[in-house]
Amino acid sequence: MPHCGRALYNNVLWANWDRLERILVVGNGFTDFCDDLSPAKQKQTFECLRQCCDAGWVAEKPLVVDQGHPARLALHSTSIHSFSAPVTPRPPEPLLDQADGELVQLLTNLTVYS
Image (cartoon, rainbow, N blue to C red; front, side):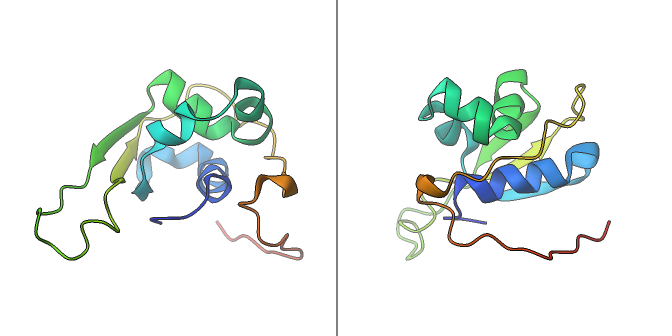
């Protein structure tokens, strides 16, 4: 999921909250995502990301790309994330903040199979 917005990462965490220990996420570093958000924004829109970072439920291993590799610039902040099982109930469904700039379109009639 490199270069995806915070909302997508947060939604993946929310949808898999009860089985986080069984997934891996390859994408942007969560630490950077959490560090540059205001506490109010984290609580309202990105609660799953915040809880994973604050509670230490995510292990983030930066992807190492050789200095001369052509993909180095594209993957400079990519990490592999693994998770511990959360010890709190699933947070409320994330709010979609259309002013955030990361939300492209609200999808309706989406069926999720588990």
